[in-house]
Length: 233
Ligand SMILES: [Zn+2]
Image (cartoon, rainbow, N blue to C red; front, side):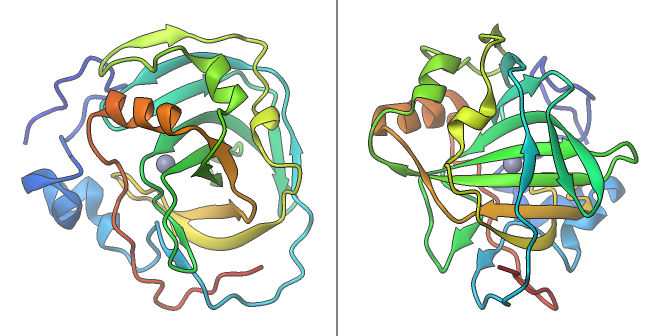
């Protein structure tokens, strides 16, 4: 066992990667703390076979609050100040951070996207809710453009405009799919509420390429079996 070499590992832990010996197929075996990676309710998944449900309209109340962006070697992640919330199941979840996967981790009806954003929220008990948004390639994304000229290199961080409101990056239509899943990175903790927006947004080829280049490799965990779960819409 050895620890991540990069200075940005917030809590030094067991090294894991997206390929090789420490790759996804071995995550559960790397340390007992990662045993959930072999669980039955893992993310990401291919969203299909939808069950019609009366999903409540998405209640988000986001305000400006991006603080800094870091590249931890696994992803490019933007920290967010407290005060931006998602209300779900009668609970209030605070937006903590958002980050990116290239290509997308989840798929929608077998379709992969070049980029997926994950907005990670936590309630007071530490329960997590992730709001995912797919990007397709197209015009330049103004929100991404305001976050950086160039995303930080591995182990680096940089300031971002505190005026950035992540709501501006999301589509007008917040219709979503919902399922139960996990963190897509070790320790792969389960019990995560997943919401995936149906409407993709757009970023330019150059922007997607810059993110991929800054991480240096694909950072999507392979699809996980649905097992007994349903995807609600
Ligand atoms: Zn993620």
